[in-house]
Image (cartoon, rainbow over all chains, first blue to last red):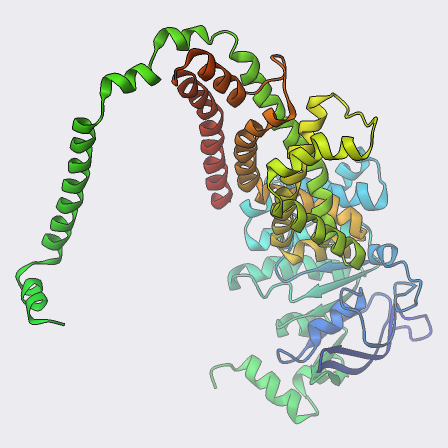
Length: 251
Length: 271
């Protein structure tokens, strides 16, 4: 990891409150270009909220966020421009249900990036092939399996050429036997050098692909380090007990 | 529970009880039908409603008011959509004044009788603004007069449709860098309109019937709609057959629309 270069994500003193409920209680986080960071933690720990703050789908109550070269918390920030550089993949895929698979990838390119239609179609086909979806261009999202939909969703996020990808529990809504096909696509993306911030419960993915694992609990980062440290030798009791519950649910 | 009912219940199985209840209902219906058949003066009814020569004499003139009914309905519907969709968008806006205006608009035009709005457009506005000309004459008056009421209902339907589009669709669009407006046009509205096709079809049925109010604007032979034509014939022939013909022609429009709405609704559920 090159600590000299400017980080692609820099979060300082991030707080997020929903009414009286303070979900994030002071997060400081830097992510270097090309780094893969996995966010783990019990439900309600604030992982998804933290992720959604990085592209300002949630507006921070306090603190600053700079991502992909955009000062997102600046008063005059152009969020639409910034979000092109920050791709996002959702738990429930959120493909545009009234469009064909191909249009899901073409329309954002044409409407957001003003890419000519023909070029956008070619790029869409290339991306679909890359995530292993072929011959489904004219299908509607509802005709695809969950795993296929999520792979299309990843391709769609990539279509506007982001520099950073956010994944919000991308495999949590999938049947266990098709989780692998989505993780394989994500692993390939990581290997290509994409910067990724991933909220996940897939510890094997975190162990294998992440450069760094963050354990969040009660709105603060409790542990941070290489997966070998955080997952195998957690320092805190909270992380230990969480990992035990995730890895040995029957006990 | 009384001893008598308990005894009855013990004597009859549920199937028997259901049969008895059915039997009683059939008996009542049969009694009413027989009573009507005996009491009614069928000759007179036939004379009033089923004069074939009077019905035949309405053609082909009846096609002009029939066609006008369709034109008035479509004009009002188009006006209702053109105004109603933006009002719906304003109702879900996060800019307060838009929301307030749209809410007031919907409350006013949903609350006023269509007839009163038609009077307002046809006579109130021209009186207040002398020299005002509606584009297309009576057609313009109808489009606005019926369309204003319709737009309030359409706005409410479309608003419900917009709110029924899953939030994830908006989040996905915004995360791709689409602006709020772009998201509305490209993602939310197309889905919302699909959701509200059944209520919009019903609105079209309502408008078909409300077009019968147009006569208050003072229409000529060329601009007459179906109800007015039927009533004129009723007066001149002193016979009710024209009402039957007019009514059948309305059903010729509204029943297919109703069937269409039901089919679209089913298709919506299947999705």
